[in-house]
Length: 332
Ligand code: ATP
Image (cartoon, rainbow, N blue to C red; front, side):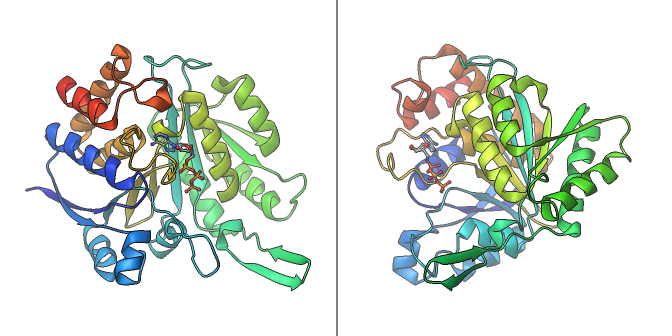
């Protein structure tokens, strides 16, 4: 029986890359059925909500969501849909694997870094307070519960996947209580995993280290905001945002999405790179136990990248999304 999943089409380049990814999933023989919803700015204009109740009801039911990028309207009163969904479904672990493709020429080879980003708190709680006309306070929240579960997940993942090292990224030298507690918890938990090397690094230093000597890192675990920034940096190491997938995991629900945004500057031009969403879909297939299909798709992408004939402009090629997709399907 086909596994039913929910798909949010998003806006900007969202619809283009979603169509393309679903076509590739079908061509690869993924045994999936979809409940598909338009979400985002256009949906807001039509029906008054960025995400309809029906769309949420579908995710409530299927528990698996493939989500393409959604633009958050600028201005007061709009909370990011991404942040809203992560909190509504308690998707506390944002896992972002940055792995080099042997086929692409980048500054470094053999990058294989997974960022574990805490996904529910830190400055993302969105609590800002106008103190007076010239002063605004923003609240950073770090709790033992949320820190413990993301750090433990990072170590458990390392053990399950034969990874050797977990590094905690923080700013505990300045934020002595909040990041200080995150680091203390990291040290406590690391003691339970003597088979895995545990190190820590201050966030500014990790940025420098990542552009000088990135292969020293394996798994990185950190609070929400650092995870947002550092994972974009890791995407640059492997060839850009068009390549970095992610999954957002909670206890009961899982959402898979590209790390990049809706890229309004190239929307509608037919040149977006769908790989990040496609690799996110591969993570979804693995989550559903369809590892063989995920491997097949990854191998087809690698073959197309190696051939180098159908690369999208972000990868220094001149192919359209359509041509790239057709090449992947042919390789399958
Ligand atoms: P957000 O804040 O929603 O994450 P952002 O401001 O970081 O969004 P993105 O939409 O991620 O911005 O785009 C950043 C840059 O990367 C843009 O120039 C965009 O065109 C490019 N980009 C992002 N995703 C892709 C993609 N899939 N293919 C090609 N270029 C992309």
